[in-house]
Amino acid sequence: MSTSTPLGHRAEVVVIGGGIMGASIAYHLARAGITDVTVLEAGEVACGSSGKPLGGVRVQFSDRANIELGLRSLHAYGRFAEEIGKDIGLRRVGYLFALRDPADVAPFEASIALQTELGAVSRVVGADEAVTLCPYLDASRLIAAAWSPGDGFARPADAVRGYLDAASALGVTVRTGTRVVGIDRVGACQALVRTADGHRYRSPAVVCATGAWSRAVGEMAGVLLPVDPLRRQIAFTPPLRPAPPRVPFTIDFSTTAYFHPSEEGGLVLGMSDSSETTGFDRAVTDTWHAGLRDALSVFAPDLASAPIARGWAGLYEMTPDCNGLIGEADPGFRFLYAAGFSGHGFLQGPAVGESVRDLYVGRTPAVDVSCFDARRFERPTARTELGII
Image (cartoon, rainbow, N blue to C red; front, side, top):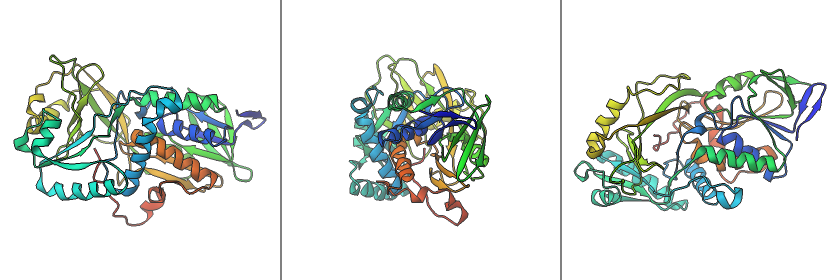
């Protein structure tokens, strides 16, 4: 628990951000015996990107580190109720990437070979088997599909609350409605974190886990975190009659259009909207629905006219190469960061929390996260990830 001094509240670690990254980091620090941690959240917990109704969890990536983070996190979510004591609604319906371009098959085969080497269960299936797995697909439009049966989705907000409740029980302090407005160096290797309500938090270590707002927080500390916000929207059908079959989280790789079951007996629909520009707008619109229906008509035509009952909008935290930022900078005090996951932060949250904990205590993380250091953009990089949705 933080203590108060003439220079403000004092803590061993100040974590900025009460989403999945901040929550996971706080929990894993506390589990390691580092309980003098204060979490500062500008709004309510899980009010940013982690507040989305359902979040996918998967191992289907092409990059070794992303696969490993996905695997460790999927295992953690699988035992979440037992370890943390909260049901996060994990449903392992599988992930199915529909492939319609012959040129996409070989890269996915290479990715699956690496996933298999690292311990995942995934494989390439033919068009007929893909339709058996997901009857909404049109076999005549498919070449093949990439299938990982252990993947699925869960409730991000419940995971955040579970981690923070468990961290609080271990002694971590969580302060909501506490917006950080400045980070200054004071004394020898100390930071003074200033908040809009006039409070100050003095600590030798600050962790930035503020998602789409991470660039601004990094600038307060004199650290470049190249993260830009990008609105992404999803749509929900009403409960369908007859009820939809138990289908996987199905994605058309060519268009990024996807669908999966909702918890209300309908479907969740979404896709990347190329007309979006960076910014913090989170208004729900229907202007992207026409493009979504066009995409669905190509690979899942029975869904092209599906009714839409409501929508949700949140922010992706985009980096130039669509990979996360994990590491530590040196602005005169310890400044660690976990941000910029470009749409797959929830599914990597548990393993990233472990990694940041290990970086803090000086232990080699189980996953080599050095490739996520923000300084990679200071030099030419060809690092890419195939499985960005």
